[in-house]
Image (cartoon, rainbow, N blue to C red; front, side, top):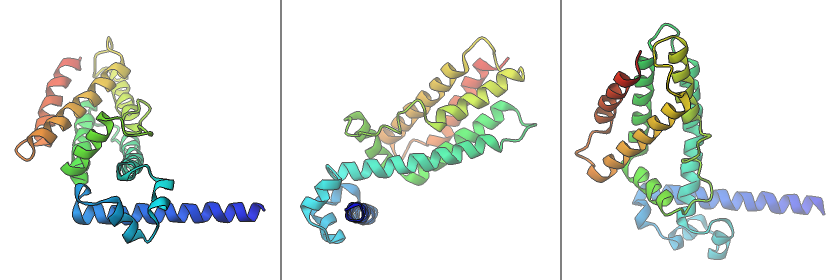
Amino acid sequence: MEMKKSSRKMQAAETKKKIYDNAILLFNKYGFENVSVDSIVEKAEVSKGGFYVHFASKDAILTEMINDYVNRLDFSYKSFAENAPEDAKTTDILLSFVDQITDTMEKIGYNLIKLAYRIHIERNNENDSLLSYDRELYRVFNTLIQRGISRGELRNDLSAEMVSNQFVTVIRGFTYEWCIRYPEFNLKDNLRRHFELLFAGIRR
């Protein structure tokens, strides 16, 4: 009996992965808006009922893809903080970190970032990993800011947590600006300039 249950779980997991993988292939090839649930089930060779067992909509697939990507990104952010040069100025490290974030977003692409914003604005996401205050992104900013405070480089009358939250909010705001002004708006240059202004206010 247990073996049958285990076999059914494995089969269900394989079906879900098959749907997910084929949907991503279609999204990348034709664009998210041009792919239907019908085309996904045809490509994955599963029934429409089988699709809805695993995903409420094609938005749910995109959401899962974004959440998976966020988890991988956060791992790379953690690695960045752990390998920061000991003798470097904290503000220089923070600028490099901001550059890494914008480089990553540009690699993900404007279209996917725009869709991610839409999904989260509409609250069509059961797993809000992109919005969680427990994300590694916040922790890295917090760690670096605390580093600067302890070394006397940054003001000590501001909470590292508050500054971290403000930094992430700024990044989100500039990313939104990038989405509505694409392709004229240069995300990296504008975000870097703004952070240099922010650092002028928190340096000791």
